Length: 67
Image 1 (cartoon, rainbow, N blue to C red):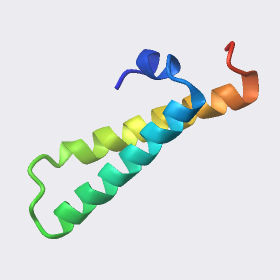
Image 2 (cartoon, rainbow, N blue to C red; image 1 turned 90 degrees about the horizontal axis):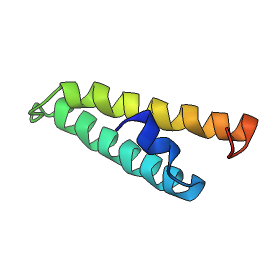
Image 3 (cartoon, one colour; image 1 turned 90 degrees about the vertical axis):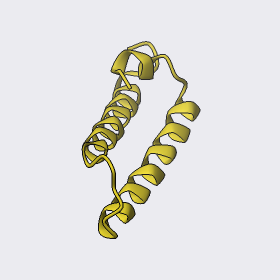
């Protein structure tokens, strides 16, 4: 997901998306542990999406929603 798309979401939508991605990351790591992971690059993509959301949440915290 692109940062521009994430900036358009509200705070509650960002929280929901963050929980969804954390759940997906847990499932991917579990699949990797039992050697059933089809696309290992998906783990890094999900991690980057989580980092993007946390960065945007921090930006909103510091500068408000008008940033």
